[in-house]
Image 1 (cartoon, chains in turn blue, green):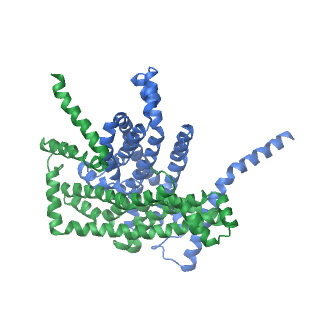
Image 2 (cartoon, rainbow over the protein chains, first blue to last red):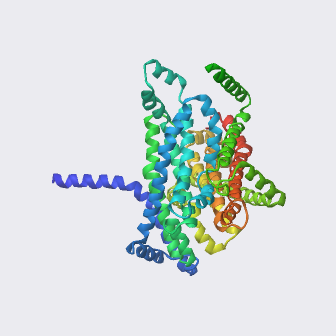
Image 3 (tube, chains in turn green, red):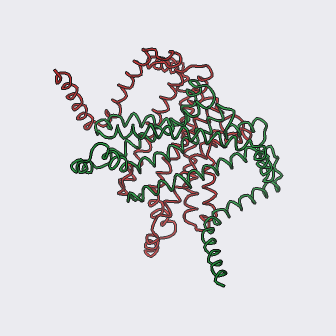
Length: 268
Length: 273
């Protein structure tokens, strides 16, 4: 008896958790129905836009022959490598530059200029310097993330009220404590926002760079499918790209940003 | 001895700081001078082959040559016209759609996930399909820019509209405002800061998408120039293109975005970043 009640409790709780997910997915489901309906009513040629079943078959095919995971793996590995390298270099540099108001005032325009160039604008020169492949693409991603994160770190550190730093110093904080307990935490919301923006640019840059400069990865998968007019594979790839980005942004970056901002008691 | 060398530097530095605080514009130009000097020193030291890493003088010469031939101006015009036309179209459609979705709970429930999903697919992923549909040309590029500008504007407009307190709607209604005047006097002004954020993001992404589209499908434009230069191995023209892109964004920021933001931000009593 009690077991049943507990069970109901569990189901109810599961339903409660599933509800937002359901209300999110339902419209997408309706859209897919519409898509199939439109294809059938207007008898659209598969060379223009594929039907749902064709996309599913193409997807299943690329999963069973393993090529999908190869492409996804290559793309994610490039993003991860470039992003992590960029953050490791950008944050210390940004903190260093932001400590002195004069220096940060001097360097801000430079970093703004380069953060504007983030991502795609580096593709031509990257492919010329590094040749086609992993190096060029990682370089593009590194640049997309590096300048945005360094610029935001610089902003974050220089926006910490000077009184806070004076207070910490007068309480006897050494350099190291100042860095760990004042500068880095104070700049963290800006750093996280920078990382989110930077990865946004990097992801787009990645897809563009993969179309131009490689033989593996999601962008390449799309562009190769175009050569053979395989619209079903293109649409499948687009859906994969969309879902991957939603997952990266909504499950990792947005919660990270929200949490740091909430924890630091900042309201936007 | 020590201070003989240090003191002039410090004096110069403090003079610089004073000058810059008085004329902020100088402060955003001057830092580029040492960068240019550093650049030419590194190039003159010949760490890298000159054809791989040309100096500022080479780039300036390329700028002079290309603008005398008229190529640069024509390409620049192509890119800017595409950006402006696409951004304007995306902006109007975005605000309209955003108001629709933000004001109607049914539309919101039905369309919000779809909007998020299409935003996530990203402009550039559309390129292969668009090339099949429209070929290599202006239609493809226009579609990409409109698409890129549209989604950030829609999403931010919706956020802005939905963040207006319901009390304001009710107050306006109880004072006898018609639906139209609520729209123009309450909803639009209330959502304007968010719309501006959307426009800024949209232009930032749209402008990058334009460059990518010009590289992949283009026959003209700054992105095309850079990629064409890449094919012929001319690093000078690539660097020139990058510098122009940076300056172009400065111009867009200073001439279009900043004035609007200042006007709305000040009038609305808000501070934008």
